[in-house]
Image 1 (cartoon, rainbow, N blue to C red):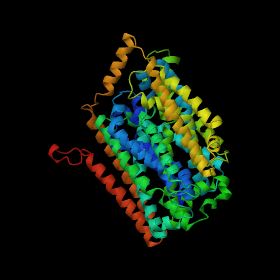
Image 2: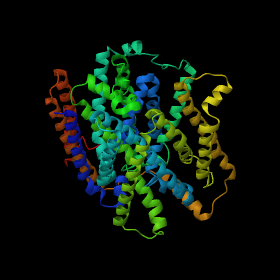
Image 3: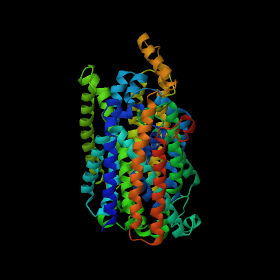
Image 4: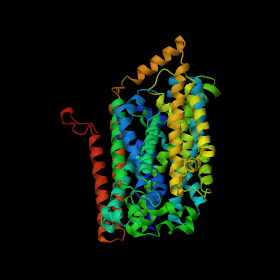
Length: 589
């Protein structure tokens, strides 16, 4: 019996049940479908924000980078930690206080209708591109495990992601994110502990790593690595704290829960940054051939499947299936930004104001339009992922870095700065993006990293050149694209009375806390009860994995994971029961 397939099938059933159980909560209105009606508790918001940043790419592209180059692979996660810290300190609650359903509605309030239309058609294609990268990362794993051609797994997993996203809407996806975040956390800890035990401790990894653990095989300059780290931090600060990605916190029930959600995402990312790359680092010592183990199935992409090799060779039976299930849900969380939120953006910022010419649209019509756009987006993401699978000269890590720096950063710069800098003209946002795309063209085709290196007579290895390309793009956008946005202040003129009133209202909301209403308690109870029961079901499923033929330590590993999940589920169900005010110990949960 193939236990991995059985685990994946069982998990698919659980995710389907999760989305179906929250379907009613997402079908009440379009705002419920697009952002959960602004009723979500902090632990749903935080786990979802975390899972959006954590995708299958972590266990494919980044793991391959860690296997080859050592410690520098975690720079992107340290950047995430600092970015969530900034979100907790400033942005999270203010994004919730914008009081909108979609990011483009916030852009309209801040930069006007022209900018709203521009960013609608900038965000949707970009999210399709990113969704294709995430889906490709997931399919690399599925293809290696199932022994199916990559193109088939792209369509199978892509259609599954699309189906689940359409069924449950924002509620279903957030619920799936929470359930899966527990499994990912527990299994990541388990894999890290086994890796450290088998290799003999972290010191053994550092001492026996095939190349320099802290500098990588080719990079010897501490200054070079410091620059790479700093620019990665800047990039992640922009990625998380901008108006385009504000949807992470739009669904929170109030300002306090948005802030608490950012703190939960921060804590989860701290744990993840500390342990995720331990298995591929250990694999470089224990299994030097891991980068070629799945060459028959994956060809040039085999180097991105080293995490899978570790799970196959070092972990008990069933772990690979559980890991695949976790990666599927992680990708669904990430792809939701290219599906559910794209649908909301299209309906709110194009369908209603342009196609329907500003007429009042019923919630039923908005929901149907959103689901139709959802389906079209899903198919486009699958086609994009299929295209990426043919780019044999790029690893998944390099592909993600190229997409995010050359295409994404020009959009993020004005949407980050525009949230904190007030006196700029409305056209500054879209003009900055146009200028930023020109900067991307220059750094990728004219003033490239190798051109600069040759000018200064510096020789760069292939790995250093790839990192230098990423650093150059980020630096150019920070100083040139960001500088262009700041220069638009010189063209600022006082707006008309109507526009001034709109801006004053936006900033009043931006700095005024959202407080949940009296009906929120019933939504809180329903979330706890539904997710508590689903968590208990997942714990029971993991408990059955303890019966899989394994060594004693394998049985104990699954038993410990199951008991932890069951305990969390029990606490959630208990907190959902109406009890006397003086005894309500768990209500804050």
